[in-house]
Image 1 (cartoon, rainbow, N blue to C red):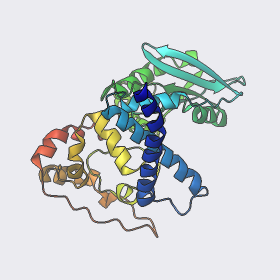
Image 2: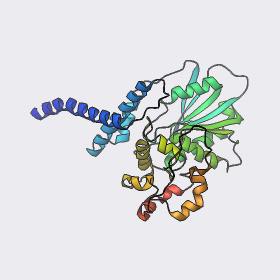
Image 3: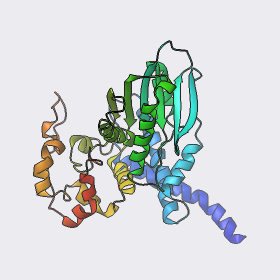
Image 4: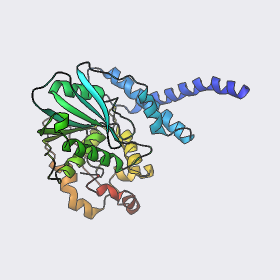
Length: 324
């Protein structure tokens, strides 16, 4: 009984201590954009994200609960924002859960179709969390929106996410008439890791001539290159919430089963062989990115000394299915 009381008394102190440590780290590293209208709100949300991730990591090290499951549990407690003007239907395409959203107002002709893959780094994100955004897409564009509930960490790694998104999309495209969708007006849309999935799935779907052609792809802050982390977007935004480079790298390592100890080699380019860099530089370098007037001049790309062990552990990232 004494041990139980000791634990109960010590738990609040432990939680407060972790919170204080996270806030100190947060103050030292976070860079809030000066043009933001509500910087305090973003700062608070980012701080809470770091706090729950830290608690999840502690639970995982204690072998109590996997960090992704802890985040997903907390996420499931959040309320769902519903739009009374949008009809929501849950279903399964085989074993893949999907959610169909369309305006309740009747339409005299087939609507546009939007296939949406949510974000979350394969750690978090769900049909519930992105329902508000997709309801807005459905109502504002008078479209039928298909949300794909792909499988995530900790139980599933690459290429499960891509396979789920692709298989659900193929089924939807084969049955557009039954969903009231115009086959000439279908787009793929995704955010974060979902945007990455869009870039890959779009390329795969173009190789299936029997399917309706995708009209456009909409990529919202995607990571489409797992090789060069010295690009301007990585340099200039590495400490900007909510997606810092460290958090993105953690998600990447967990999903692609890469040991985090290779972080420095990957970020400095030491895992890039010189012959491969010469061959693929025109796609992976920022040399061909148009310069915008007044934009910050990025630091030059300088690859670190080649580390063959790091390359052998990460060479699968050179696959076009990972770095489209």
